[in-house]
Length: 178
Length: 199
Image (cartoon, rainbow over all chains, first blue to last red; front, side, top):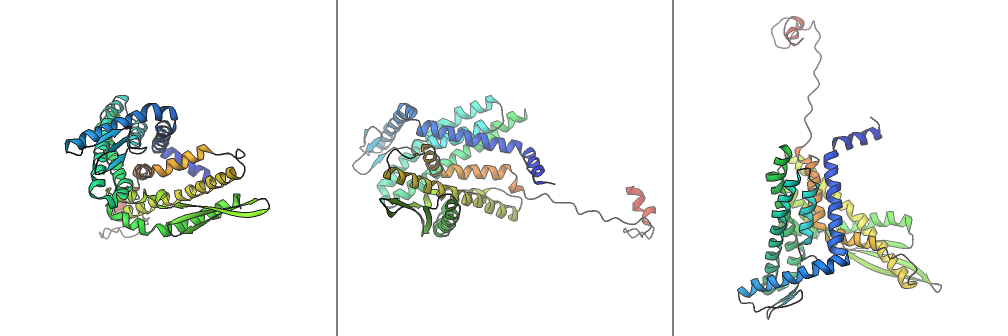
């Protein structure tokens, strides 16, 4: 078989997979650009959301007597301070989930269920991560940076992937077969 | 599993930097001979030679390779915990996935080299060159989204069926001559025994 025919045969055989990957990459890229780069959305939506997250983090840690105050996206306490910046807002993990849900060929009803349950859950996990990072800063300041960059971010992405797979198994595949 | 792969990845960064630096330098040098890319430990250093006022000057910048490869241990962990049909299929998938991500590091280093060279051009003659915002967004997006890249590669590996292994090919049936003794041991000719049944 010639090279060209082999390529066409490969594309034909893997059309669904390639479609999923292309839609996934384009959706994630669009979300990254929209929420991470476009100044209007960053200032009008993400910045107020990070301020809200900072207030939520302060409220949680104050339950345990941290004595934290909030100024914008900065949470300050006598023992440690954190600034909720880009990448800490849960947008990346949500974008991953959104891209997976939109790229998988299934019914819109299954997609809407996935988004309605998955996105709030991911943001709740992100809030837990931020609270965890605050306590990592208090008790493990020497490895805070490593925990912040390599561990906490990865855990949130892994949990988002787990939620995506759960959605695929419980909702998307069933609706696809129905 | 992820935590187990972290030190392994950390200690392999020098090798990764050498591969990415040498490959990126070889490809990038074809298009822009002013730029050279050299690995230095866990950092890939980009040198841009510029001539200003008749004097040749070299400006350099460094790219820490951990910032563009920290999705690797995550991918390795994801592949290891995924159920595969055989150990061979799992090892092959692991090597394939890691290979894809390592190869993706080369264009990332080249993008960094291009951004450095554009920055130098801007410093020499402000407003003259293209600041290439899109390239900068793409580079930082790739760096920032390493865990997502790892998940995307892992999903691709699953969807291409690499964990399932290669389908076993049936061994081609050996043609038995019609008048030969039947292989079932009956003593009769093949055409009068099993050959008749199969035909």
